[in-house]
Image 1 (tube, rainbow, N blue to C red):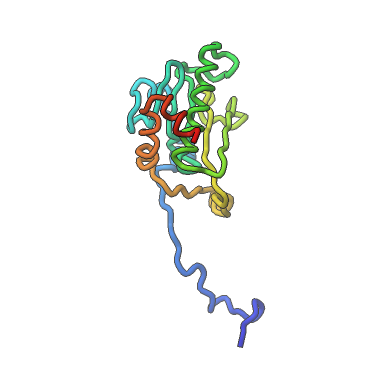
Image 2 (image 1 turned 180 degrees about the vertical axis):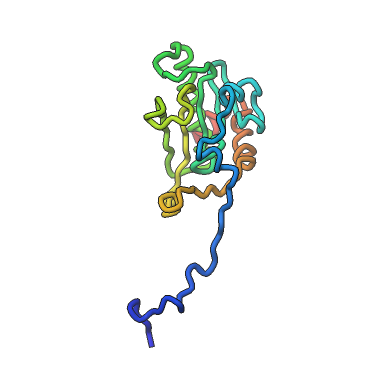
Length: 189
């Protein structure tokens, strides 16, 4: 006999059969803004240079590409001016041009390394606009795939990222340590 929804008994249902639990206690202090870092994490990354310790993958004359420490998706990058500045219009012409060339490079690298279905690029200017570090502007560059969002972020306010920061760093670094000319040729195919 086929059971209908109305005839199912709650005690007979097993839901879910298996549950993955994501424990991230290290995010508690960040999410609740309990830890105030001294100084600017982006300026610190600039000083350290390209390394996993700083999550910095690339530096140009005026800009840099850094992995987001708390990514929305695998490969979530930040494109940041080297100079500590929270206002886009206060960048010099050279800084602005370099920042946007670096943004273009980040997009090309993500397309080559991850082959996403699309990419979100966002800039939140000011705390009210959603900037987590409003004193130092930064673009978010996030690769996206069909179906990469489900109910989890809405219900649990948590995003499941399937790649560790170490894995993302190792995947992206070879593309950014090559001369830019080679990257352009490889992505043009």
